[in-house]
Image 1 (cartoon, one colour):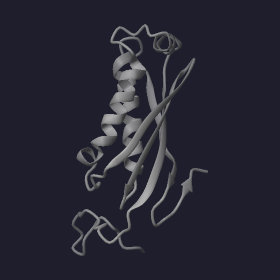
Image 2 (cartoon, rainbow, N blue to C red):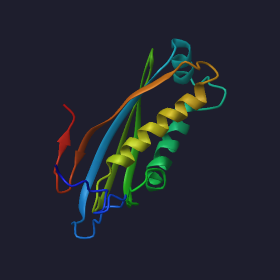
Image 3 (cartoon, rainbow, N blue to C red):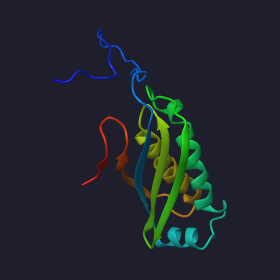
Image 4 (cartoon, one colour):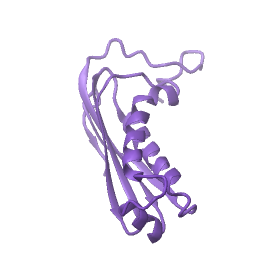
Length: 156
């Protein structure tokens, strides 16, 4: 079995030492979905949610979350983000979020993209819960990553 990178020789949690790794350009794309009633989806699309512009707030929340990933996920490295973008696809049954994070660093941005997508989805829930408390968040996953020692990867 491979040695677990986040455990030291005594089995204690540790942050991986990336100091010997080269700085490379890296990008990660993550997605997720929130399913909701047609009423909630229409209210979001038409800007009728009483709390305000749901997608604008969710976009800012996702970007802010990406910037705070190392504060939220134990053992994640704080990395300098060069770009974070959040895109939305609305349909009659909900919203799909796609988050893209970029950096030039010694470690990847997968967790930042996943955190951005997750928090954007949670923000949509928070903003629209007065219309539909039964919304379902799911299918959060990494779609692709580029750069670094392990190279490029795309979801099948």
